[in-house]
Length: 475
Image 1 (cartoon, helix red, strand yellow):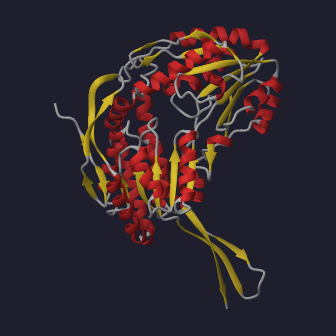
Image 2 (cartoon, helix red, strand yellow):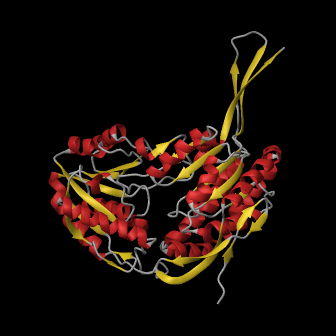
């Protein structure tokens, strides 16, 4: 049986490269698709194509751009079932969650299509007589977009859609673990009538393709989502090579505070979802559960029982509640952290084992905030419980991290909730909800090692993908 073959897209042409298999993490011997690996020459050609296409795309009437973006979103939604199955097979995400991601991607393109009709620019009173002052916005230019494997459609969508909407051209470099989702997105964009060179796809290693985007000439900016260490490298390269504008969305070590007055069922539900949904492979995962003394023992007992009851299995099986870890390398890293946690003095209350690439969700108890498992991002189904004497200590522990993406609290106290929203050092704060991402019309981003540059999503995306120009007219 033949499998799909996805090529790179450069200047409207499908470009071959070294052919490699894309494997199913739930069934490691199963080939989901094959893909062409781009080299530096292909990446360089994609940048040049984006550069050439820029002026024409920026001048295209807004109505034309709007229709193309709306067509892209509509096609994604029309193909939601097929795309979701493909996504689940190549990334390991549960089918229901994969379908939700596909729908989110389609809605994102449609959202930015209609954002084009919103007011733009600002008018100011000038301090000089007979002078009109205004601020207009122009596109940033040709933009490189580097995306991770954990949301192979949603993250490219929330970067590509606003980039195109604001008149930029794009070179997308997705993670090599998820080439099929990126390939299908490229096909949909090309079929929507987007002119050659406006959107380009290059799939390859970060050390090859990524480096060409960072160090070569031609790009005006880089939008990156991935690990903190790689993000620092992206920033350094952007400054060294052309002083490119850069936007970094990186890791998280997100706290969920559980107060003595919390509803126990709500607390367990938030912790279970926040810690283990998406197999813990998301930057907003609740990897530190900070629990005050009065509820600590009851919470640990209830959460450990609920964690042990989770069903781990094939993502296409409707009874599965967790899928596989995305790769053998990621699994090894997860298991290493379980061993590190034990060596540091934490105990495993649930999980800690695996069957192939299926890892049991793991709860470490008796952790302290200075342990590596409480300070370093694991990016897997591993969470640790840290005991706090009271809310004051819980907030202090929550803020004692290099990261600052998401933070949550479970409480029935309005004053505790309001205090946490005021004092938590994070870009996203939740009350009685999991530490999850945001809706597509709201800003996404964090503080500290989690973020650098303007926020993503909603109207806030304009701040990265456009440049303000102050204009004066005298008479």
